Amino acid sequence: MIVLCVMNCPPGLRGDLSKWLNEVNTGVYVGRLNARVREELWNRVCSNIKSGQATMVYSTNNEQGFAFLTHNTTWIPVDYEGITLMKKPFSVKEDKEQSSFLQPGFSKAAKYEKIKHFHNNTKKQPGYVIIGIQTTGSDCNVDRIIEIGMLKIEENKISQTYQCLIPSERRIPDHVVKLTGITNEMLDREGVPETEVLKKVQEFIDDDLIIGYNIQDTVNFIQRLGERNGQNIILKTVRDIKHLAKRKLDDVENYRLETMASYFSLDVSNVHRALANCMLIHRIYCELNKL
Image 1 (cartoon, rainbow, N blue to C red):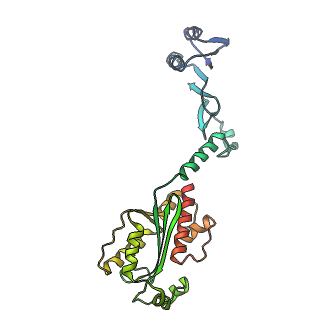
Image 2 (cartoon, rainbow, N blue to C red):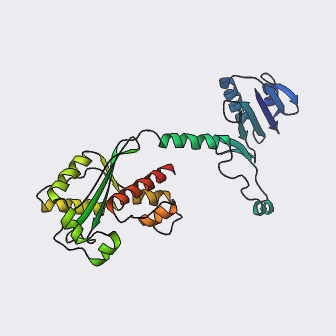
Image 3 (cartoon, helix red, strand yellow):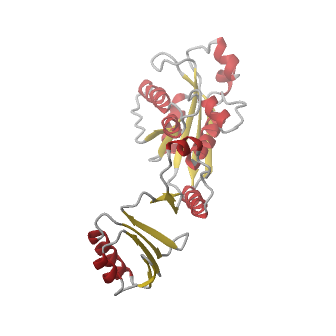
C-alpha cells in the first residue's frame, strides 16, 4: 500500500500517476504496487515534478510498518533510534523554545538494539589473562616485583587464579609496606623463587591475550625479571584497559584505577594486593564492555 501526495504538480505528471494509482483527492494518490514499480514511479515523480513537492508513504517491514520518501519538501524524514520521524523546520522563536523532548531509548527499536548489544557482549569470547603486580617502586630497572597475581578468563568466567610473593634483595620501603601490608619478613617466609615464578607465568599465559591496567609498566617489570634470570620473556599480545576507558568514558575526573572503580560503584578494599587488583580490573573490563 502506498500514499503519494503532490503539490504544484504539472498536469502531465498527474495524468501519468492516474495510470498507476487512484486519485482520492486533489494531489493525493493511493494504490498497491510492488517495490520495483514503486521505485520507478518515484523516480519518474522526482524527474518531472520540477519545482513541485512530493511525499510518499509506503508499507514496509520495520518497527512502524511504513517508511517515507520526500522530494523538494521542507519536512524531511529522519531516523530516531530505529523509527522514522518527520523533521519540521522551526522558526527562530520555536527553535529557542523547543528542546529534545524525546529521550534516548524510548522506542521499541532502541530497546531491541540494546538487547542485541547485550547479547553480543555476552557471547563467548576468546580466553585472556589478567595480570597485576606489586613492586618496591616504579622504576623497573631498579625496583623489584614483590607480588604477582593472575586470572585466566575462559568463556567469560574465571577458570584459574594464581598469586605468590617473590623474595627481593631490595628491601620494601615503609610506604609500600603501609600501602600493601606486605613486609620483608613475609617475602622471606612465603616468597617463591623468581625462576619458579617465571615458569608459572609462562605456563599460565601460554599464547593468550594479556590484559591489565597501565599494562606496559607490568610488562616492563616482568621482562626485567626474565632478563635477570637469563630468560627472554615475550608477552605477545597485550591490551591496556586504561586506553579502553579513555575511549568510552569522557565524564570522569581522571583515569586512575580507583576512579574507574568508583565510577562503576565497585569495591576497592584490598586493591593493593595483586590478585584483588586483578579481580577489580576484570570487573572494570566487564563494565566497560557493556557500554
